Image (cartoon, rainbow, N blue to C red; front, side, top):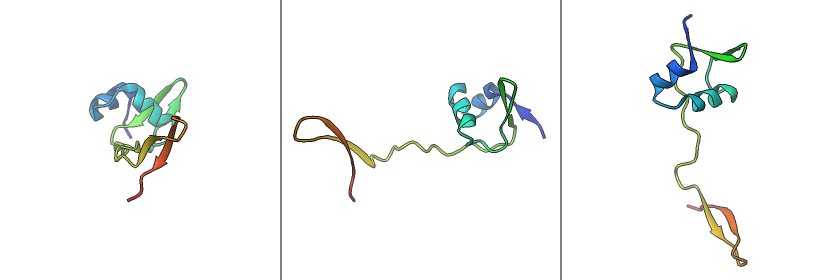
Length: 75
């Protein structure tokens, strides 16, 4: 199996190297291994889906005191 570095996979996937490092730390890249202080990633590893909320599911609103609160949007 061929392994690549964080920099190489970040260029392949079009995201920054820091984001790839975070994905490795969270265990979201299948087959990624830590060797010393570096991560090695299988060259054929698929890019994980973005799990950040983009849909507007959570909307900040203010309570009666004017403080920000998080509410779940009801559909």
